[in-house]
Length: 502
Image 1: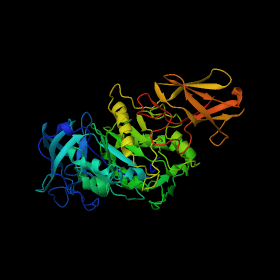
Image 2: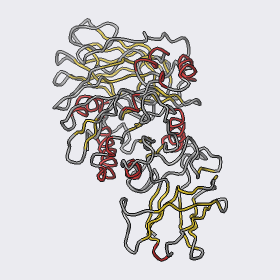
Image 3: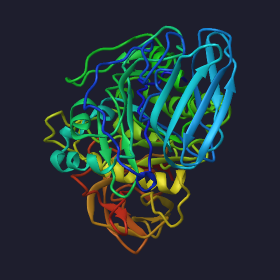
Image 4: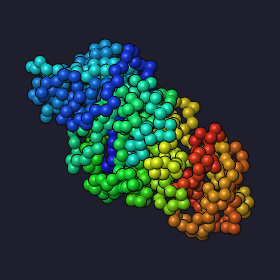
């Protein structure tokens, strides 16, 4: 399912602040776009060069994985690559086939800086990349919320002031391009750079989560692909129409990156699918994750994990009292499990965002400004799933049972202690002798907290034997900012929406 949406790449090093010695010279805040034929390097001959997304100041994947480095050579003479830095000096040889050389480095621990130099036998020319770090590479993409700049946040000045405190984080952005064929190399929008306030505020989106993990995103993803492979232009007033051919964005923007060893991916998309092939999203989204994992694992010589961690943001809000498909997409984002990871979507993590509405956003309510909250929830998931930290709570409460105590009440028991407040309309029941669907007749019913892990729902006039289904927060805009009725006991993580047959 390649090409499900626009794929926009930003790679970065994370958890590296403690690994650097000496000073880092920040690149210019903005640079002109670089074509794939014009990679960034220090000194080069006419023929010998690195691929476009290798550059001075970049990050390569740290040990235990092995980073892949590749580029172009004009003759069949062997290429010699030298890696020099804190862990010593490594020398690697590569032949040139069809004009391309490729080296798989030995595992390198996090840190740096390193210099990477390539020379070719019989030539006096050389190419050197300086200030290369080893860390974790995260590939990030999605739709317009992945293009939201730091300058658009509510506390933009405070966030931008933090940029200079992360010299070991490096950012990179692929240009928004398309191709009918899978490309070997790509066009660079923002070369590898140290974050600056100007860069994060004007050129690309970034959100920080203090405490180590930094996630930086890219440009708008404006289109969505359905199972039949057709893209739908999606316009919320701020976005323009895009390509209609299938996979043209995968071909130009993601396929060239398959050689690179990655740690994981972050995804923020789904708004367009609320109106297009919505009922297939529970298949297309997990299938896309599967396909990315297979492609990156193979392309990197089996160095990128075949089940690399994949984090995503469950859709936030758009319109109040609207039947717009957002609840269904939220459900389908989990392959209809309601939570992640699950049996169908293993090694994934999800940031619930339905409690982060922003009616006053100057960029439209489809673009809430509370990105730090979504980023923090992603960070918790990454620490638990991607980095295996123990004792990290990263999932909101989810029901493990629904029982009847009498003829009037349902008791919902959650998988953890909860903080619950009374609500008249967050729960709905379907009163029917037949199984209910998303578009059946549903009735709002009151809910009250009962115990540390339970709430009760009053079914009202519906005979208990006819209560066939129950659902929670099944609307585009279920609550005000951080005011949904059910959270984790510390009120950090909201309960995700769910629907179940009784």
